[in-house]
Length: 263
Ligand code: GLN
Image (cartoon, rainbow, N blue to C red; front, side, top):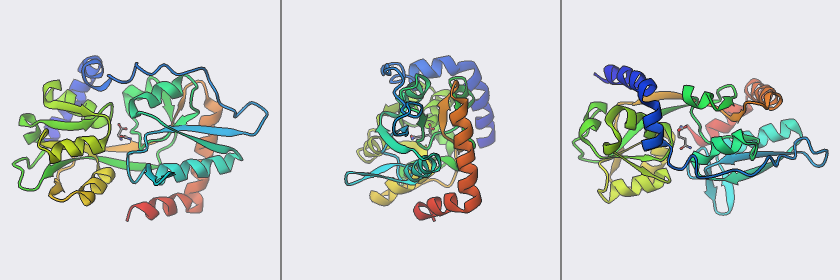
């Protein structure tokens, strides 16, 4: 049944992508008109590498006091070091990252971002550096026990994420409530405004650990690859980032960074 739903999801995703995007997954996408390219990478002055992220997605990116922390932040720093560049971090809404990268406002987007066919129409993606799983968070004692139960549920999601897009495609916009951050969606679950939250597994674990009375269902919704998005006309940076990732993989540094945050 779960498999069937996922197949249905893929088929519906293609047919209904435009609908899903305008009705459900694209509300904030067009609102942020990025300024012209501001990268210093080719300016001849101190080299900078600017990244866009949404620092509300632990353990990939989050705030520790006033400091950015997390897997993506450390990977981005390591890539900047590899390039001899200074990393500039921009904390923006998740849904504005791709547009900002596309226009050259940011050199790259690194935000636990899943590679999807639809996103590949707008940006290039680096090689994969991590894997994510969309999972379902419910309150303990919930009657929701599997993916098929979502058909009758009020689902909370983070706006513009794959969880949002898949749930809209599989269950319809009426079942889906979008929130600016995953934390907001979880808060809505705690206060019974939604029945469950569909979100990536690692942030899900952080949210469940931080809030009593929640649990993650054993059934996974989808498995996804995370990668760094880069403008289509910036092949040089794509090659450099892939070379840096290869180096980080070979040296064991990537594993070291990931295992610092995920055990
Ligand atoms: N992996 C999900 C996506 O790419 C969520 C990412 C995020 O919220 N930072 O849509």
